[in-house]
Length: 426
Ligand SMILES: Cc1cc2nc3c(=O)[nH]c(=O)nc-3n(C[C@H](O)[C@H](O)[C@H](O)COP(=O)(O)OP(=O)(O)OC[C@H]3O[C@@H](n4cnc5c(N)ncnc54)[C@H](O)[C@@H]3O)c2cc1C
Image (cartoon, rainbow, N blue to C red; front, side, top):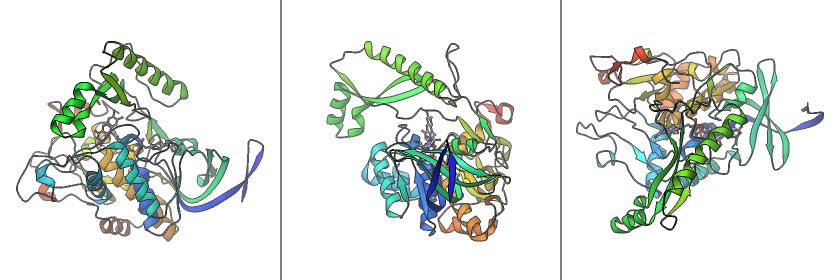
């Protein structure tokens, strides 16, 4: 099949069952899952390593994967990768969780802080050993649409403009860029003044030598340093949506200038920057306006079409289930998203977008895509029981057990009933 673009005729280079656009943790999870199910899978990644914000963006923490009372909620590929990362890079899994779910009650949370670059290499190994076709340094551009059906995607790379066909497309660019270009409705976000890298200093290196722990060698260096709540965001700094090249550049230049001015205050002989974030540390640019948007009010609710249970990384007890509908649009039958562009609002979206749920929604989107191909139906219309069985076989918890639900179901944030601040942060 050929298509005409910019006056040129492009021949389809290859047709895949599943094309995954973006190799962050969600995209890697989606690609590996689809390939393991036996479907031909292409993974397109615009940078030169896998992992997205979780590696390139220097966000190297699996936030808590439990309910804060010693019960594990997040399993699946996420737990597998948390443990894999601890084998070769840093191991920050707490003693209580070293051998799995603790036998005794504990409020110590199940986290893992890993080495970002070693984890990126391990992700590459996962992808290439499962038979995914990986293209690095390759940007997924416009999808080719016929009505609301995606026939494939144009790519830009060293090889020029190329066209790959697909039966199903999963957009894991983090920004919903490909779906947005295909006309899928999306919701834009706002991003605070955040840009954090890593550095070494003579004193931090000495600490590493004294303790025998290489992690001590690194300290932080930042441009803007505003937390996820936007507390203390300066009035004279914009909140960037990150949806235009000018905004991305303005965000980077503003932060890099501030970082440079901080460096000037230090003794140049005693310190060196080792890592700068190689992608903007935007929490959200844009997410799908899906068939359902997860809300705080959904806490502790069971959904018939749940694809995974998730917990709150800040607070004990709070639990949600993630409906398949947060990843799909019924009117775009062969396009889905996963990761931080899943549909949610306020605090519920903050809980949905972080690394552990991003991995699980990547797995869910891939299983939904594969099942849609098998059942010759839309991703939104697959047989939910079969989808859930497939996810359970991959060790994903679909519904949280009712005994984990506390008597008082109020979701409290910053000492307030959270429903009052719904939508306060996006
Ligand atoms: C400042 C900050 C702090 C955070 N702290 C934590 C934390 O401590 N713990 C935690 O769990 N989460 C944290 N998060 C959230 C978490 O890092 C992300 O939500 C999660 O990593 C998102 O994964 P993803 O795969 O959905 O998207 P991304 O990580 O954004 O991956 C998208 C990938 O797609 C690629 N891509 C983009 N466009 C294209 C294209 N057109 N073609 C090809 N490839 C493309 C990118 O290069 C990237 O590799 C934080 C986020 C930020 C910004």
